[in-house]
Image 1 (cartoon, helix red, strand yellow):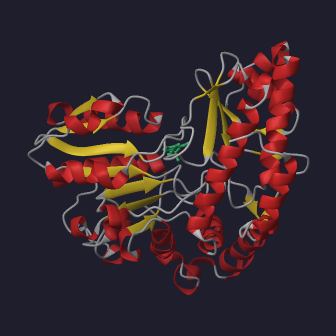
Image 2: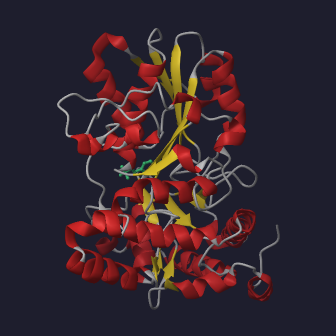
Image 3: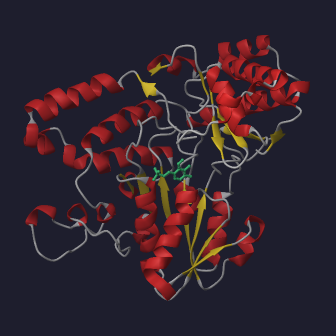
Length: 412
Ligand SMILES: Cc1ncc(COP(=O)(O)O)c(C=O)c1O
């Protein structure tokens, strides 16, 4: 691609079917926000909805709202909405807990579905929490399971009759590279294994088809492209065929077949509710639902197409200028990629800090990656070029060499 011009970007914005969505968000002043893949922007409808839940449902309804305001059904109701974004049935998804906790439940659940097998397969450089949860489960279960973290290019060939599950992140958090979900799931099934997908960097950025891929299990974040707010509840998916058999390691009253029978002995629900554990976090779920409802209005194919164009524009704008020469693209140049673009540079941390000081918010991923998320729902094509210009300025001026940009903050 030739170096794009601002006029081309303006033309793309004028034709963009998603452009009206920008008005549904609070766009921070004087900021080019390229971190919606870490924390999505605030929908304008969230604050009034939360005010209503707090003042009316909680303030006036108090405990009656569990029934009257349908609080008790929120995990399934919102899960059912998320299901349409990920190619699943409404009865296969719940919104609950964090992605990490859901991973733990489903990995342990996978062990329960394959009682005679021992290995869980994943790749090095998978998102840390995914690997840590697998390591934690291995410590808990001792010799019962073995975690094998095998080179990415060998993974498909390493699936065998001892594999319980392949546990992978669909879109890589750092590079944006995307696994062929249907192909890997089919490989797992050929060997009698399960496929568990982390959709955190996919959901809300592209169409996902869990049922089409015949996927067994999945998890994902609510606070990235779903715009559910900081620490929003996550979601999990269990294919219908596994729901009656899968055992959650976190047996809690919300997963009981009859939570309000108050029996001493646990008897799991036979449907997706058996993956619930404790009382749903109603305020978090209410904010998540606003983000999900917005996303449901968007055409997912248009989202994916726009994100591909925005990523292409950014790469071409940065690489097409001499000031971008020191930055090494670590994302796929085209094709199977998510909605973010990453460049490696030994001073990536300082570069991101220098950009933030100039109003361009991306993030740093250790050890040397500067990551830029292009949220198709509320970013414009001109924002992409403007952000590239600021990055090129920072590089050309060497602005990142300033000492103050090297001080590491707790969250990068
Ligand atoms: C792929 C992936 N999985 C999981 C998480 C986070 O999980 P949690 O919400 O439990 O912190 C992230 C966060 O960035 C992520 O990128």
